[in-house]
Length: 499
Image 1: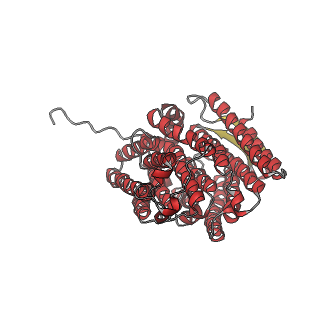
Image 2: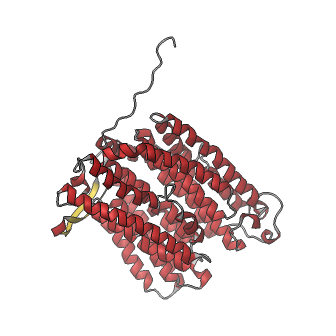
Image 3: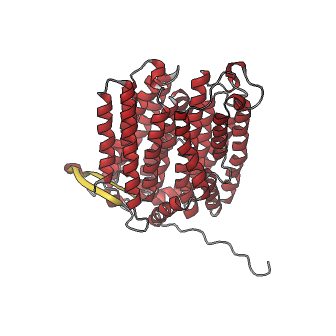
């Protein structure tokens, strides 16, 4: 059964149907139904996935442009599967959370929800693509719906933020296109299939140049410091639902690309670049956390926390140990849930108060205790409190990195302390203290908003206590990746008897 094509097809056909529905309420209902169907199909596919079977499963390969060896080729391993699951879970949540988002500016409601479904198809495609050219197509195609969602439905500076997002992404995409063409030419395989290109580039210098083309594109998408400057503007101006998908899923394409394409296609170049990438990641961890502390805008603060989190993910990828790489992959998923919850709750706050500034709040806990409680849980997950899902990811990344790079791991651990500062201080200023006059009449979460947050909170707690099912899917794919890079975990240091 062509599961992956069906998932994308249902999303695209659903988007076309929604675009022609004239009744706004019916358009929203149809979008929710389509997204739930995609989620159900994704879960059905995941149940049939065998972690210890072939690496790539549910494979489909068809000639697309035979003259150039381009194929429509899709399949998933454990890493791609969990990221597709992340996408499928977040989209219906975002649809439900965005029920009144498009109406605020009297813009086309059906267009907004159709764009959500188109974006879902692109996100599934980019994680499933096993043809490098097809991956590039999805990599670029994702920009279009997100650009319109930010530029047409965002805040006061939406045009500036959308253009900045697009220009940064297009620049990275241009570098990647050059590298893709060069990879095809130098490999001489007359094929863009990922499996055909593995090990095809032997020359170290060529590997380094091609690696840089791919890596810079992925570093911009991630975003990794110092390529991060587009994210705070885009996340702050995007509607809350679009910000969830931007930071929760689209940015993961960057770190996924590093793990899948940079490491496996250019293993020697990846080892050569590792010290620099680790340094950039550590700087990003500390820098993102420190800058987040000084933010006055709720959404910008959350965006800077994500820059810090992406530093952890990139460090885990390039530490090249099983624990670190598995932790980085799990981090991609857990970050999507925790930061998604933060952005959605921030959106609910802003919708009620009409302001993104932290100082315009205060004492929310007294008038909206459920909203404040969910905000606390989401915030504690973002600072990786034990018992909540990001803790497992961060712990694996730090322990795995420490096996090979002890000093960077120790410095990166300071990000945990800084995270406690920016999350708890934000919570204290918005939720505790005297109730601000403008907040006194604020309503608590309604039934729809509670149903938005219940799945995210349940996943954050559930994966915090029992991450094994997810790791069982991720670990075999990670081990295969590290085998292709020809690295093994460092042997544990065993103290001599008597010492």
